[in-house]
Image 1 (cartoon, one colour):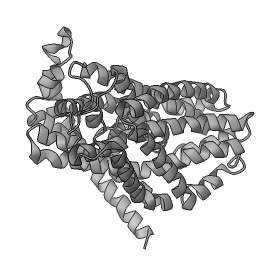
Image 2 (image 1 turned 60 degrees about the vertical axis):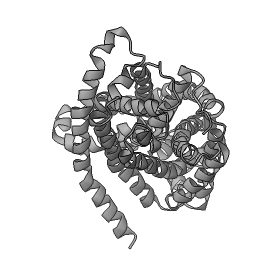
Image 3 (image 1 turned 90 degrees about the vertical axis):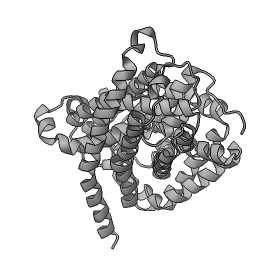
Length: 446
């Protein structure tokens, strides 16, 4: 087997991991999840889950990836636990499904960037979204996005993924800051900020069991956990990196960008009187389209906004594609370019149904976020906490003297108890909702 690639720089790894986390999960999925689940009350639970579950869970994937230097499936065999390879298989399948429908949504963002320049959706944003979100043209833009992702990943870790994310991630931050300024100038922005940033603690107390599965699923989705991305990315890093510091930067940047996305979307929705719970997956497209339709320089603003979303989508899409490509390269010893093209074609084919039917896209998204990701993360935590005897030693590498004596032990028992218990609870609470969604979709297709 040829020598395994590594990141060129530590900052390159951090930005690539941030790019994986900040994509459509933050800019597209996060705002409509907040809207559907009650605004700031959901936001409060989401942030709590990020801190209590997300950061320590990321360290689980980092220790497995760096110790094994392999993709999510072969990692377990390299660690001497081949019987656990099914967890890696689940992660790769999950990433595969995500990318299949994620690419369709990313295709929408490419289309809307061009449509902003022409003003195609300004007269009737809701009607335009209904016409173009599914069908042959949606399939075409699904293909365009996959070609972009394949092109970047085919260049490899340093020349492809790292080189792109060093540009894309700072660009996302700068563009979002500009969009926040725009949103805050709109009439009704204050009402949007109140909805987004003022939680109702009574509602949290009464509805936490309903909010928990969605908040946990969103946290895992947006941090790229449970889908093998962080195992794959950490398999390319050096032994002397401080995993705790790196994960802190990644989680911090990711959460900040999610919050920034909300600061853009909710002032915009309230400025045009759109119920934040109403548009669902189309909130990003319909709400923003209505807000800028009559604004000066609406073409420029629209292209500016949706161009930002395209950048975010690409930075995340390439990480998911790399998970699958990494397995093909490691396991079958295939060269990177043919492996990337082959995987890209298969992902495109699997995503075809979601380009034609919104109910199938909703099914993919719901099952992934509320079942597959918590299940995958729960199994990874179970393995790292009780079977992966080198987990503490791997975390120790690169740690400073102030934390070496206590942090690995605290982390290990935290994942063994708190995170594992939450993962089981989320699966129990979400199973009923996922089943009901599936039944509704099956009834609608009869």
